[in-house]
Image (cartoon, rainbow, N blue to C red; front, side):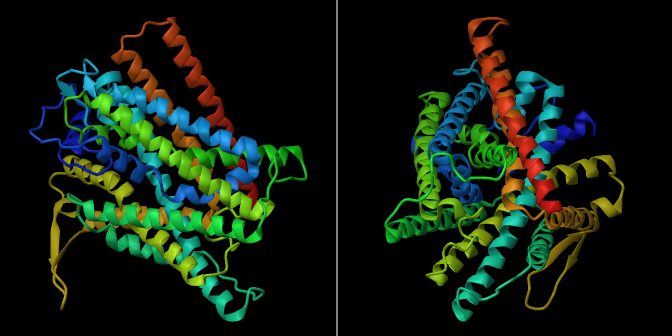
Length: 472
């Protein structure tokens, strides 16, 4: 892909995740957009962006780590997330972090302006791999929730001892078919409604999971679990489970990809970085408390029997309608979430192909179809083929590796260090003009190295879990 193509890829189209990304050598022209965001709107955006399907695995994470290491790990990830966000806040304006005239309106744009084109290309590669992985994770999670709805109804009809067995593949194919249809939408220039629906759904199932765990703990009259967590037959097995739990927590926390875009909505004065740091502190505090409650009450309710997914492991049988509603909310959230995370990649491919093959009718021609009782819609043959193949591959990989906790661990570990640690630290060095071997440089390099070690540990353990689950 040429630099010109990449520049047009990012500049012509704004998405909810990666908008106005520039890899040209020029700071983007300041837009006349009126920014009205405040401290509280930023807090709301952050909480909405962070809380999602990852919360469903936190009880399982605490079960692997135990009553001390589990909560402590969440607190440490919260601290690391907050610190990385503080570093990113200073990368919004260029060249000065507080009063620089240039604004970097997206994560990739900030990486390019501060670190150059080569780093921007590397970052873009990691980002798009991340988006692809999230599509796989969402396919798996939605299929598990659809299966759980069927099992819940079966248990309610036939009794809790009934053999209510359902496979995942048929539900993954249903989810994939839905995504093939929705992926043919040319672009999402205005998808606030989709984000709102996804946010409402995520809060619904998160609070239902928390409430069910709390109710079961109170109903049982005791707190289950232990200091060391779930016991295993070998030390190696315990180590691998701990690494997978850390990967799952890493999936649940960082929001580095949307941090700068949230900051771009804030009005000034005061400086956007100051407001964003306050908002991040409040939002991470609220999110961490919520995560501790979800993970803690889930583990307290089930102990060593804590399921990998709190809403689908069937520790909860009744009220079955509430379990059904919660899982329906998960599916609704992920149907929209899949598009939110894949449309940026679709847009990039569409614009690159149009630039590369300007005279190709297969790439550039749209055909209008009108069916009875339905509005007219446009079909582009290249878009139809590429997006169908893309959804087909994410669905196929999900069918090959339908393992919720392990897949979340792989994706969380794969994204955590490069996107939440490495690039924010390197941009901070440039913005603050921190010299090599100074005290701050050494401290941040040690911080980055420790996070890298944790990331590698979580990634290797999660991959081992995938392989073991596949072979078992």
